[in-house]
Image (cartoon, rainbow, N blue to C red):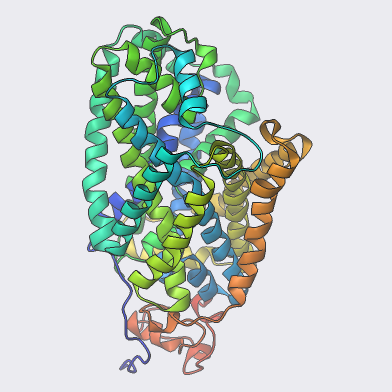
Length: 548
């Protein structure tokens, strides 16, 4: 059968030059700040070495299956998150926009952490933060951040200037495009990150007290395996560290060629991310063992994960260890590299969606979305209340935004539209590692149950008492207000007309002839899709067989 001439498609979708570039970009997105400062302490607080058992089970039953889920949607429907969900069913489009808006929020505050890391890489040279744990804590909150509370727009000049540079650098990479910008950056930054971080870990193993630190990290408490909270923590760590559920992996997979080995790529990305997390745990606790045994005045109960580890505990350690300034620069450079590749992927989710919806060039989309995003970030984050804003936005965006929309997406796709078998068949049609009923069970039963339990617990906790004791008005704006705004805007954006999708190569949008896509794929279009010229709600969900 001869394919009809495609009409209205003047621009093909950008893409990665090969699967290896995609894998590096996906690893760069997955490996972020949370791998370095979140995983070690989640493991430490939940049974040490014993935590690796639920963590591995969570990786195999939720993390990698969710990667496959995102890959299948993005690759089959060839679009950003809103466009891909629209091509499933027009009523599912808001799901994609919620993912985009969650990414928008995360990018707004994530960028300022890179500005902090860049500042501290410079501070490492003269160790201006002091020599004890108490001094580094005071320097970070009072001298550097000038932290306050409530509402305010008193800018911290140094952070503001560096944040502007971070955004200029990020948008410059994205202006270069998928392959020349995102792909080449990942190919350069990820190997460099691994080399620097491995050297840091090796150095940490030879510090005095490193053995005590590793014992604290790996000594198993097998009794915790009967506690539901430990298993929820394992699944939560997997959700947050793999960049699943909020459009990143979906968008990246839409840039792959038609015949790309999806599941093997997912296995490489999933296990690479987890290997880096375990490596980070070894390096972090070996160095903290030295810190606790030194004269810095820090005990194990004083140290926690998050920014406190990077900007309070580690500077105190740098001031005590031989050659500290060098290793301080190495550590904060690692934070910059890990954070930048993640930030690029987060912003790309928003840019790709705008480009698909409006039908403009990459340059116009990057400037049209990136500049306002940068402006919001610069307005809110380098202020004296920036740390407070970041903390609240991070909590609500992750615990409610990502978890909630991942749960809704699974329920809608697996139950309302019953696309599980279709996505499974798509994965198997292009991949060497085949998925079967176990994958369906993970996506339709195990992961939704865990997500629902986690979401219910988080919402109940946030309602029962103010998060971290913040004022109700502040939580109402940066927390609950932000979630409400995301929901309202997702509906508004879904109601706006599509102007760009018909120009893209891939499954049809609402104004395309659905038969075009099937002919391009060498497939026989179903009867109800031939020459209708109407939406795509039915056609992608139909069981389609190869033409004889």
